[in-house]
Image 1 (cartoon, rainbow, N blue to C red):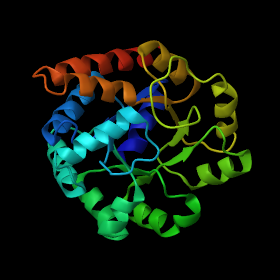
Image 2 (tube, rainbow, N blue to C red):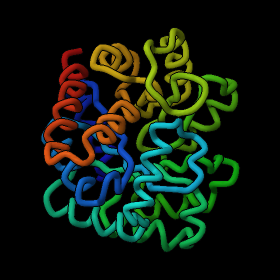
Image 3 (tube, helix red, strand yellow):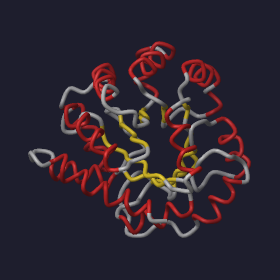
Image 4 (spheres, rainbow, N blue to C red):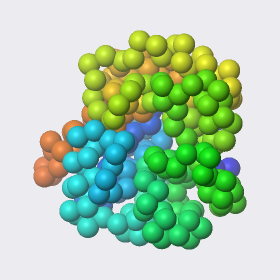
Length: 266
């Protein structure tokens, strides 16, 4: 069974919620990505999203844009990231998702990229700029390789289109809780309950809610509404702050553990 599917099945059977963590791959370097991912596993994280560095990350706010820039500066490329994931797989079975823009996949070739991901131990792809209407071949190749193709739903998505998107997804649905790009916010969105109810009326897939979640209290509040909450920029901000410190992994994983523990208390 795919590790993402297995993890959410475990959470559901235990009546628990999950924490999905996003970091920029190669920020500040790939050894840090390796070590952080292993530490997140120990901290109780359900899924790790690794943002593949890209020159034009249009869905991302400043914090994650700068992480992508640092990843590029550290020499991180898709092949080097997959080699790092292969090393992670020697020690951990934590579900791993690549958060990626389609141009990087297209450059390699769709089938080769997907097969390379599967061979390295990737469990799913979240392609930011690939709409379902253009995804037939992508979905077929992903299914053949045993990978989850994860789709995003925005708060501005009309319900008929929402239904179409979620019918095509696998693994989980990533619900963007607010308009705009990624980034930390002082409050969670006020319409989560109604929006998640709409989603649940159209799919049995787990729903992970992200964008703007900055602290344990917000993570707990958001996880109550979905099956998991996604925290990215707040963690990336910690990496930016401690990136040159020998205590990087300890400090960032301590913050992540506080988020994971908050989600588990629901």
